[in-house]
Length: 82
Image 1: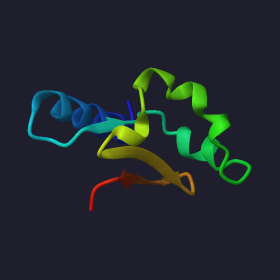
Image 2: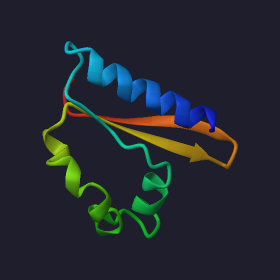
Image 3: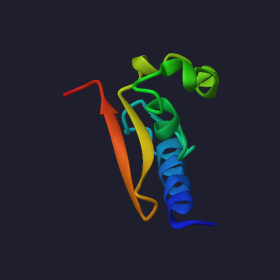
Image 4: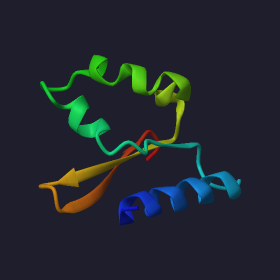
């Protein structure tokens, strides 16, 4: 198991156990961001991947893992609340 998978598992576990956290959705698939931006920004490329998550834009935050250059992981955060 890669370090990013362990990290994502811990984030999901904390989200489920701590009720004071904001309404957050965690996308665990590290290929999501790459596929989303494959041909510019094309939501249709990943629409089926999120259909069971409900309305993503109703969430406070969306967390997306991103692999940079094949050797470094970052987390993108889309936040609807400032």
